[in-house]
Amino acid sequence: MDSKIQFVNALEELLYKKTLDEISVSELVNRTNISRRTFYRHFTDKYDLASWYFEQFYEATFGQIVKGATWEEALLKYLDIYEEKKMVLLHAYDSQDINGLRNYDIMLTVKTYETYLENKGVDIKDEKIRFAIDIASIGGTDMIIEWLKNGMKMKKEKLVELLKRTLPNDILIMVEQ
Image (tube, rainbow, N blue to C red):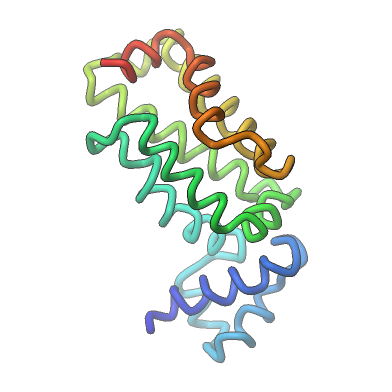
């Protein structure tokens, strides 16, 4: 098994029990029986590992809007992962570090919207479009995190509907094409 995957598996096991901030690289190394040097060959720190882990399922779900998936179906697949990995993600998002998952999630979402809109011929350097991308990325990410932290009481289909209704018009127009 690939050593990166082994580190991801160890991280996921530990995130079931405690927050990302409470996990040490030593614990990850001990769980895998792979050297610390190998860990640092792949990742700069535990936050980099958590970001890589998150990116794998992000790109396979919401990231697919840049490859033709509808916004709704991509977001529903993304939320499926949240339901499946609820405790892991709760503990990952609890990080207070600047390199924590929330900031990485927002950055990925910004890049996804940029690519999505550029592919549709939108000038993403326009000030109004930049603002719309930031509002959609930060607001959407934070509302999904709140949904997760509040026990996912709302059906994910309803959350998708509400998030779509709150998209800035410059993005909504492109999503509905």
